[in-house]
Image (cartoon, rainbow, N blue to C red; front, side):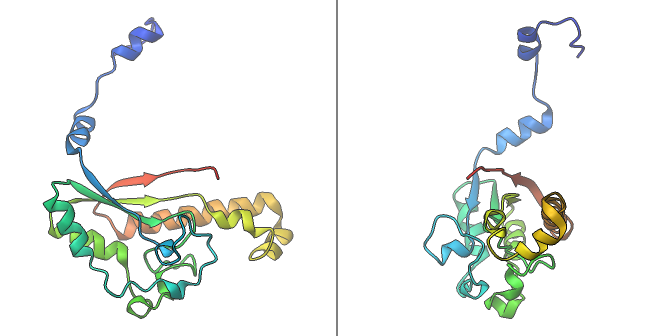
Length: 189
């Protein structure tokens, strides 16, 4: 549809959803699972400095999540794969703050894969939630990366952080191709 010459209000009311957008709206009901290191600390948000060793969900059953969602009439499930604390629910090669350093399945646990497979088994769409925000960024000048930050300066340091987040996103997109939705949220503290 041509919008040139239309007034703003005419243009806005002439917008119609695409078939894809209508199909998305018809899905209506998703399960959202927020499960990360702060599950084991009792805090609302993790701070990024939690020891990976606290994350050991020995009785985790992703199939139970998917089965419950399907029985409840949900069309899909979105898993928080990385929240603001930076902990990755897969064994990331781009950070130490991930499943590879958790005792869960001797560092070989991959909750993203387990959940994706369970969703497929129960006919659910699978979505991933990735937060670009890192609480650790606020703490960097105080400890962890302060030497690196002093050596390369703020501009390069922030470029490094952005690249680091991109690598995590690419890892999810490449290794878990059946995801139907990417839930990417930005927050200010």
